Length: 225
Image (cartoon, rainbow, N blue to C red; front, side, top):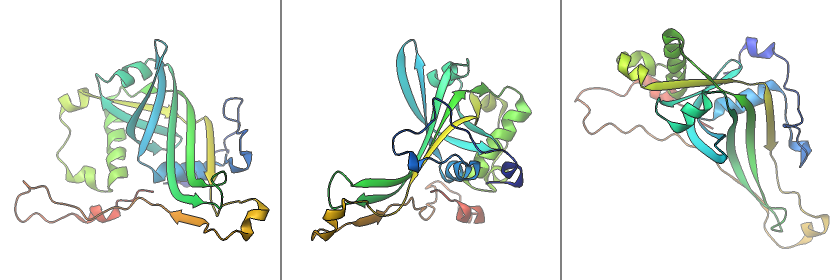
């Protein structure tokens, strides 16, 4: 969630690597919009190179202030590589609709996307690691962390948490109807937008849930998209 502290930070400035050249009118560099996109998503894609071989790993993420975080197994190839300081590309893309034009050339997708470049840092302190994981669970469902049993030390040891400061960032957003060639607007062809959204469904009880345990209220606060 964007805070008053976020508002005090300057907007992102394009660099040689993040300057939008293709469809530059869709470029967005204000921090508020970038944070709103990141806070709306839950799944990111982290790109990196190991010994000349490119990889892209999909994983859950969350944001705290001017950093993004992700975590996983301490034996993960991706986490072991990225924590050593190699360059990483962190990407989030949200699809908002299919844009159907009167021609295939002008058909498109309404979307919001953020790309961040940098080097990830491993969270090593136990207290900081627990605080980061608590923030992650709070992103999933506010109140979830307090409702669960405490983390075992072995579980904490088996988990790696990485963070990356948001400094070199590019953001693109497309909204609105199709932009057809002027002469095509007279064609008898349907055009418009088909909205697409992520819907949070009704919670489903674990088949092994003990009888009499109600669904907690925090499940109603889950939001994605």
